[in-house]
Image 1 (cartoon, rainbow over the protein chains, first blue to last red):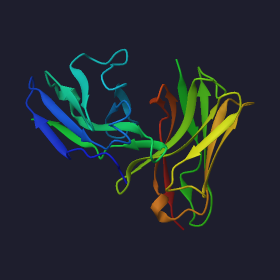
Image 2: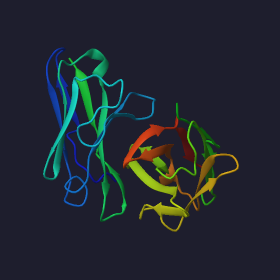
Image 3: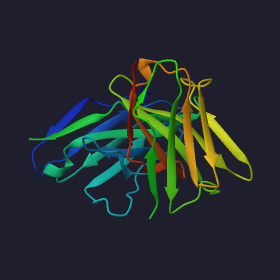
Length: 110
Length: 120
């Protein structure tokens, strides 16, 4: 079962800004960097943000990440129809000595 | 570029062993900077990290508490691949299984996924 908590859904119209939260604890988000993944139906998760706020090559700068304490956030600015997907946060958990994921947030473009 | 190609059966009987293989191209299973992981995804459990193997002058393994005692992840340096064995499976182990490379604390490259159903 997922250790990090995300809202089940978020939505916006094209061009709007959408923010997704990720709540963890001192042993994961609070003490390590956070990664974000985008998953389209039937495909493997794709790395969207690493080390809390870094974008891999090829990821648009509309996507940005941040962290404060034991919570992290993913922001999508200038929402586009192709951004409709499931988004997951993830981090290493020092207490569990394992990698943990969020519950996932389904983003819908209205 | 780095690619991971998974193989293995999609149907396993209860109490038997689930076995999957992940072939690596563009990197080495013996890399001193990467770890090779198995992750699964199901509607009931979400994304769940299962374990990893990595080489840092010698081989190390780490497994999730939820499957410890039932899981083995092994590297195969001759074929540049690594494998997952999950023993004594039950229907609860039905999921899509992914292999993934972890670099700098980040699973960055994932395999295509294998849907494994545990059923008689």
